[in-house]
Length: 157
Image (cartoon, rainbow, N blue to C red; front, side, top):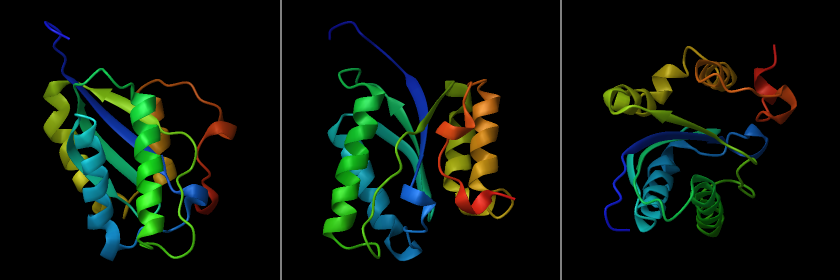
């Protein structure tokens, strides 16, 4: 589209099905690179990505408005699931849970969010995924129902 200019920063978070510990450290890099390739093919730029054992954070610059965020995330989930299963990168059948969280940020927050995403391992040594995700939903004042959140089996206290 001529004369259409955008600069939108989005962090997307989604979890493995059943919150299973599926993404081992030895395959994390390969999975992250593949997902970055999907974004690149859709003309989006990944600024930071981190595949935790049971969930994923992707921070990207959303510039090509030819694809909606739901379409993009659906494509990422389907294509990465197929890749992981075809290459047998995880034990058993791999899939992502339904749903995701998407959070927008100002340009002034870009470096902070990149740092946050890239330091997930350190971050999760202090805070569970459930605590992290609920904090994000609350910070962004997103109304939610507990029954529609990710399956947080291991985080229930």
